[in-house]
Length: 369
Image 1: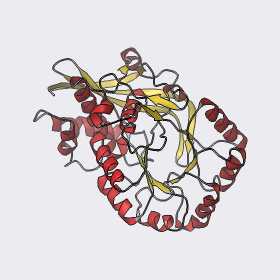
Image 2: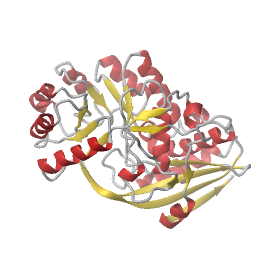
Image 3: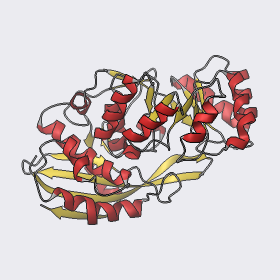
Image 4: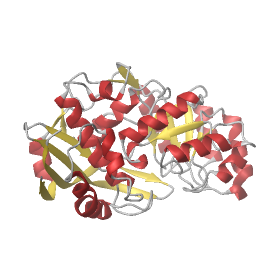
């Protein structure tokens, strides 16, 4: 790939509805878009999932801009990239900063797929024609609002409901949901809000036939999760704890989880995502793709990775209209009967809406090669 320019754009988008978890409430999303342009004029696009505060991981939009501008993009200057798998190797000497790495690598993957006239899903080894869609329900102001929200989502066709929980908003709300909807596929996401001191509360969730409890303990823990999993019937799903193939390998070996939620940005890109996928296949660990309130470009990458065979559980890749009044791609991501069709067009399969991107851009920077 003969890369000639990389363009960073920072945009800001308003969410249709506030989204509340145990760590805070989001009403908008500031996003860095990465455009990698080749000598042939073809562009590949990526999206950083970092947020403005370091409350999911240590990265922020501001640190991503710095890392991409001053450290990561320069590493692509000195030698041509033949295949996107090489990008993570170039970035290896830079520790952490996985959101920043993934955004650039994702754009290179999109460019590679387009130059080879392949859908990104096929370039990654995906086999599915469509993917199942779940939805994440944030913490609500009342039980009544929560039940109404779930009812509305079920009518829209979502295949799985994920409910955010925290101490004081857990057993009671899950019990109420199960009483109202006894048979729906249901999971609880704790976003690291508990400790082993809460083990009796977490064990009490076993009675509700949950698909899984996601990341109940600390964001960097795999040891205590193993202790907890040994006492729970409900599968633990790890999210924040898994930043790499090595994290996944150790968690599986220790018995820290029975399911893994993969987020491309959290693990540093699509190449590492594929490696983790293959590891989970080897050990019979089901997977699903989590969401970070992505706009359309990041959402398209999620659809592509979810097309791989071991993503057997519905992910959080809801359609564009679930989050945005107007997305930044054309056509927007749409869902029918709880499924999203995997695009067959080259690359991510959606065209960036340059008019909308330009209108939302706060500032940009161009890097010439």
